[in-house]
Length: 347
Image (cartoon, rainbow, N blue to C red; front, side, top):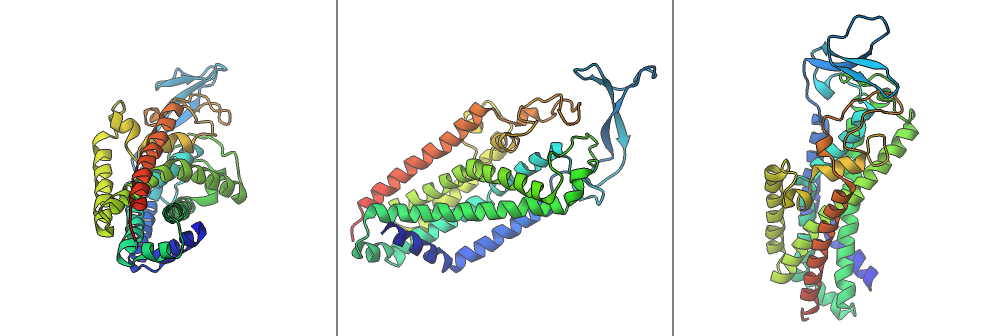
């Protein structure tokens, strides 16, 4: 009976014109973000020049590696259009950072709104089209009915977020130098850190693996939060319309909170209640790389990298776990309330 409800939920969603309309809008938003890019232009870039023995004393900032070699930071003035410049090549030190940017932007409002609409369609059908009464009369238990609906919603959200995330980053990568970035000097940032893979297969494996991790551990906990809250509101008031209003209200509230608290690192809201928080995306995108600490100095591939200027944006393992746990705990509370409302419903 669980699988019967699971399958009929998909049919209900796919038959809704509203679902396809909102999905098309979300796809356009994701495309425009990937097309717009992450990095703007400027008129200078930085490179590191090795200081040879007997050379005149450096005039700029000097970095000394662990083996005693000296590098001078040299500013190169060169007007460019950032990652929209035809000469742009994505460096490995920016590769995972961009991946986090692409997926995090989708959580500002696009994917949360899609989650709300999907739940609104399901809950609205329950009360408007008598789905609940029909399936209960057919012998479906309340638990099978409720969790069949919920699992179908979660499955669809995962599939859509994963597909859109793959499209977003791959579109960005292949329109910003593509495979040429794997074996050429990054431009305009001239910090040279070799990619650990050089082929299309290596790129696809690494990027897909990282995107899957970000979808499962960053996007899905937040999407479940929006979806389960919307479901709870709809179940309590027995209305898909009220569910949509309540769900979209939380999307707006989360977006406003992001603008207000995203730079206030020590606040409770920033640590646990921002669905589009930057820290988990940056940390988990770099989890298995040479950049898995907020402050990295020496890289095994290039020798010298320097301090990460945006190290404060990354999170700690404890911070990431706490953030995920909070999303899942709140979702569990909303699921419990929704299930109680469903159990108490009469045919």
